[in-house]
Length: 117
Image: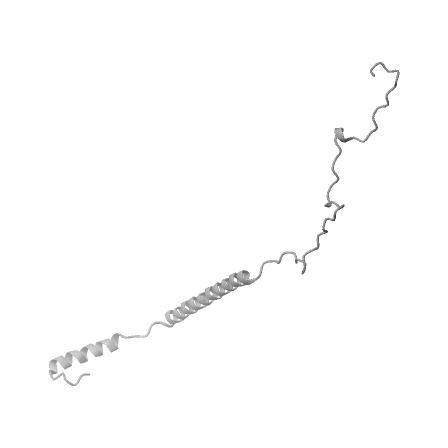
């Protein structure tokens, strides 16, 4: 108690209040303490599960972003050489189609006795 209280009636009131508090203070039942401990353990386990799940999800997301994409086909180290057209050569490609005007059939033979001459 405080030593600076000199009033004996006030000191008596404080002692009465302390005695009353000691008499009324009882520990909680064991079942209540056990249940409170179980609740606390469940909360801790749930927090650990949520934390582990979040860390795993972030790890998967990070790994997915860091994995390089599939590389495309590998290009040759040097470019392929192209044939240079010479004076008589032509570039490769499809042959031109012959049209009706550029046929190479021989002209029709003319009969001297035909009336169209």
